[in-house]
Length: 277
Image (cartoon, rainbow, N blue to C red; front, side, top):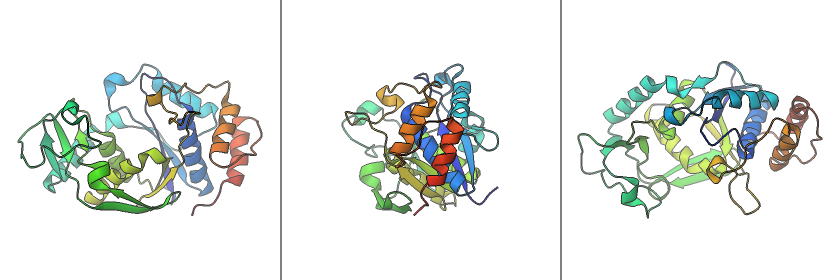
């Protein structure tokens, strides 16, 4: 492996192909990796198998290829790593960092984070499994945001490791994968700052907290909403790849990338990509 390895994560959900926000994150991560002579690895978030739309994974690959966002090595499918996630949950349990939870979302619907209702009840089994978070703050030097501090109790809480349907959580799977894949740098949107705090807690617990993070400014719509599948943002198209990339580069601070073939545009953008802080 090279000294610097990045990862692009994509979820093949029924809500459609990649949207503009995912292209911004992918392009920013890809440019950072290539500017450092590193690898850009591809990971498919197919943890929730019933929600993986037929043909959606191939559609992701096709869009990335047409946008010139080539990746290194074989894609990693999270659905093939359930045994590893199970082992990490058991490792965390042996460290006293998990507990069973019988609450439903309705039980705490008026609160921002789970209020640790089941933490002291010592259930021998439950609907879900949660991480027993520490009090205080998680802090790190973010390569875009600078010194970043997240209050664990108010912003993260005791997050899920396995939900009531037996599905491993995004926090558990991605924190584990980043360690196992040797990822050194994670570049993604600023909406995931609190998620990063959860990742760092897991990685510290399993013995690796050396990953560097860079959280890019979010791509927002005209009314200030995040452009994502959750806000029903339209998917990007192959036909408009140059125009979409040009918008993405402008969002990342490069206003002067002329329209061209996607690979030529990426080459130009790479020559202008700023050095990391």
